[in-house]
Amino acid sequence: MINKEFNSILELLQTFQNEQDCINHLEELRWEGYVVSPFDTTSKVYKCKNNRYRCVNSGKYFNVKTNTIFDNTKISLQKWFLAIWLITFNKKNISSFRLAKDLDVTQKTAWLILQRIKKCFDI
Image (cartoon, rainbow, N blue to C red):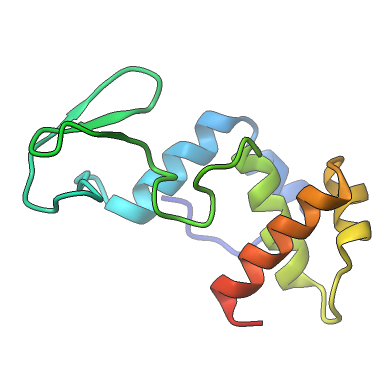
């Protein structure tokens, strides 16, 4: 697990160079090496391909983003991590227009990211 404070965007991008780095970090943060099904915490879990898991008791598939702020979005975890850093690092609020420009996404997507992160942090 990466246990460091990022002082710059460059440090963040060097640490999370690709989507798999982000997935591995999120899995370690969320499950600490022992994957637990979000559908049945007592169920056995099988690892499938493409970073997916299968809950034996419910038969449902899930991944590390299931039941998190990252769930049901096509936005890469790299962009999510960068957005979290930008929002928490800035002392003043960041607008969805500024975030959209920084992340190279639409303003509507940036607004969604901003709302989910604010809700998570009660900002």
